[in-house]
Length: 281
Ligand code: SF4
Ligand code: SF4
Image (tube, rainbow, N blue to C red; front, top):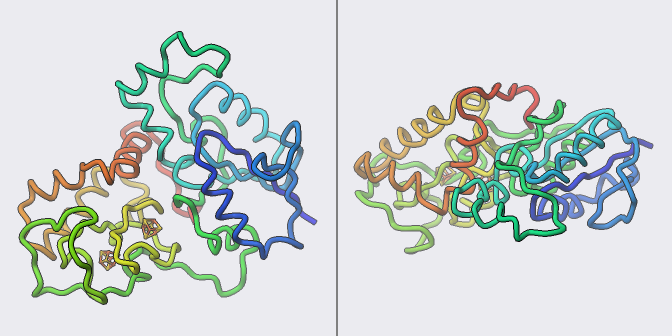
């Protein structure tokens, strides 16, 4: 039986909870290490190492460098390991100032910046999501026959984009009533499902909550700079609304999207080798 381990770096354990909700791998894999549920001193040699969380401090760096060479394959799991998320909010100057103070004794020293795991070790596959859904974990671990994912979230969402329903301002995050069956952009919500890779089955927009892009850029954008992703989103919103371009730009940079959009730009800006789309689920 193949073995796998889950190495948790700086993150929230949401990916682990999602993996535990996908129980079909039991019987096909032996889980050898996962601090959330299995006590073990160290990561053993395994066929597959799933890494969640970003490289935020020296302990993360040490653990990742130690565990990766013992694994047959390394998979980056979730937004924090691949492209940011909550731990990289500490890259902000004001937050960093607090955490880099020398009053922090007996805890691992923070690195000046949060890093994706592929800045430290080679990665064989990427499974983005915050967290990836149980179905995606199963697709990664067991490759069930017939598993298909759509190129973008819009295809899995099923809401209809209308050319004759054009709001001239944003409704506001978590405000207003949501009509069923109609694209959220037509209703004045900033939904970025058109640029976001599918596979999650669009739980957010189907429930009336705009997609914030946790699955990351679609294949057509993933090898491009984050500016291309932002302009693609802007184009879609301009086409479906009469909202002024400046307002769209301002909303795209608003705090509720910052967890994902800004961290993607931090991680994939100039100088970063693009992630080959063949490796991204
Ligand atoms: S933009 Fe959002 S609401 Fe509209 S179709 Fe795409 S995912 Fe659905
Ligand atoms: S719909 Fe968007 S935000 Fe929601 S899980 Fe999918 S990619 Fe993430």
